[in-house]
Length: 201
Ligand SMILES: [Zn+2]
Image 1 (cartoon, rainbow, N blue to C red):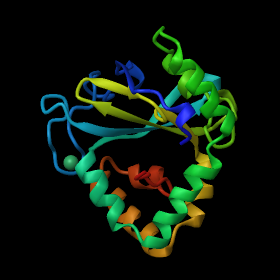
Image 2 (spheres, rainbow, N blue to C red):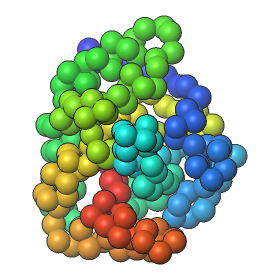
Image 3 (cartoon, protein in one colour):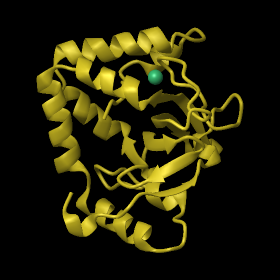
């Protein structure tokens, strides 16, 4: 990122949209190591995917989890070199330039930005949420707060599929293994998640 865009990170309360849908409170445990993220004031990533049913004015949660920065780093290191490079290149080149500029302007105001303004469209395609069938919000947490910077952002399913296609078979298998291990819930959940792979950025 260019120096002129540098802003010290700001914080806001974790918005209810990113809460654990069962407890209605911030997701408090790392999905992999089980560490308490709030009490330990850890850095972590939150991912929450939604499927939209506009006719019912409903956004259904497909999956949600938090992962501490140590586990995220470990997961990222497990990806093949080729896939890591691809992912980095994709994030660098495809994240909509206008999204980043709008974001920086929003974050440079003293007023706390609106979470929906930061995540209201796909950061890759620039499409508004109401044009999307499915999307994932990726956000960075620190203890009970949300860190504002390049994240939070929204990635449409469409854009995520584009990214998945660039990944090596080894990486896809690895991510599918992660999904199977950690999201084997009620019957049908794997089918629901199906090709939806978590992103370890
Ligand atoms: Zn962890």
